[in-house]
Length: 477
Image 1: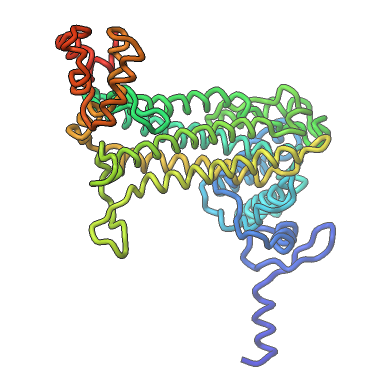
Image 2: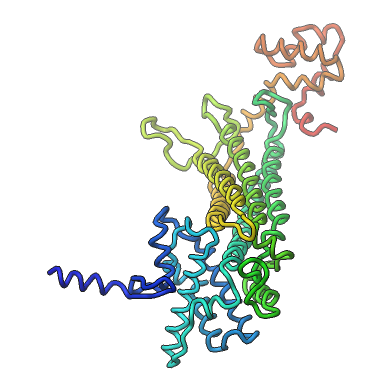
């Protein structure tokens, strides 16, 4: 190919768009325009773009705004219908690849708001032309009418996060909690050694431990529910600084009413638009709840891999399902891979929370400028925790089996089962028995007899049997 034909081919791949700063080359098939392209060129940082749920939430805001604007006489019904139809296409996920801007962009999300405005304007204009109309839809004048990036973008984040919490994470946590509750019932009569400080303690049942894990997960759902009223409170209608400049009377209430109807989410208008504009405290609260859930998951998975350690040199109290070979050099080795993956997810979520928390400090006067990365980290954390919940339940928890003989042996071998004898012979004598059983490598019962407590009549064999019944220790009256 000649230099001239090569140059002609290169030019054919682009079209010229313009904005208030001048002309810009845009890929010929791109639905976006000049401002999006400038942002693509300005932020070649991570290659990570907005989460799909966030893209769709932006389109939901634009759809509701178009309807409210038409009702209030700001735009024509013709433009409203075109924008709504275009928004529906974006909400369906059809145009996700036309949102190329990096997460690390302008902190208000203006670039991504304009990306949405441009995509919808192009789709709407194309549809009108195809229908024989010469009406144009402008990104700012029509799609962004009565709005600002400063209220649209954070609103879209709150919508996406609220939807992900309610529709994705809560059902996944319920699925995991139900799996753990089934195991709690199955293992209710499996007595095992309790442990505090990783040292032998008085007995519990395996069912009690699994019931505790289930409760941790259930409390995670409660924590999400507790934070939702603030997460679902949105700043839409405040426009640039919270005053609502350039909005017609009644716009805020109506657009948020439409948004709630469209999404089915408990979206409410900010009680104070200046607080809602300047701070992202609701997102910080939600992130803190996700961090807490991650801590719960870390505890549960660490316990499970401890209990499943072995097969011959560990605790060996439970058998975790074998899923894949565990070593490239040691034949037959199998590892608790789901536990390990889940713990790494927890680390990621905890790190994401740090990013969200630090980004919340980027508020100055009437605007926070760390919103895009807050959105990305929150939505990633929700997705990771939801997926991990289902993987834990389906690939691990449901298949766990109790090694009942091993559990029973370790429960009986714990020197701490001497504890009920405190009431019969006193704490100091019981401590002497516990130490003797460990030193002489004998059971507590054997130690009591060996030290002459039965022979001297300080405790009867009937009292001894009753006191050392490990199952009764798990349900003291």
